[in-house]
Each structure stands twice: as C-alpha cells, then as structure tokens.
Length: 73
Image (cartoon, rainbow, N blue to C red; front, side, top):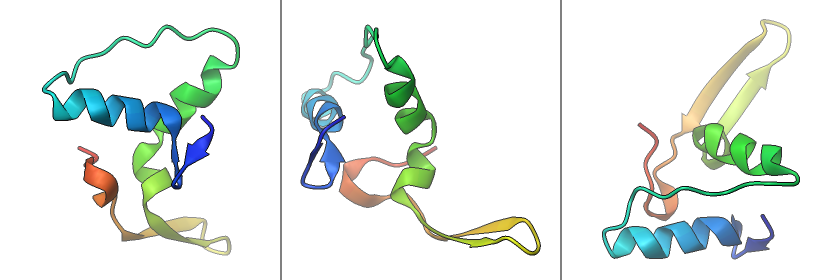
C-alpha cells in the first residue's frame, strides 16, 4: 500500500490488468490484510472530497470518486 503518485502500488497493478480486460482478480492477503480490505471497501470515501459536520453528525460528499480511471458503483 506504498503510494506512487498518490495511489497505492496495488492500485497501479490492478489498473494495468484492467486496461488489458482482466477485471476479476483474487488477492491473497496475509499479514495486515485489513489495510488492503479497508482501502478498497472505502475506495469511494478515499477518492472523494468530503465535509464532516461533527455538530450534526453528518458527512457531505463534495466531489465523487471518478478520478484516476475507476468509478465507485
């Protein structure tokens, strides 16, 4: 999950496979697999600009995750 150009190395590898039509991959995780799972489970949040209002316990997404070639669905 080391960043290169603001994105994790794993993201770059997955994007390269995706450009060649391979979109279904299995990632065998071991030690610290939680970091990988958390990143991709919350990908939309990681790639979005958000505003948190602690007083009203709310979150507003300002810009969605359409950067860098992937879209959250």
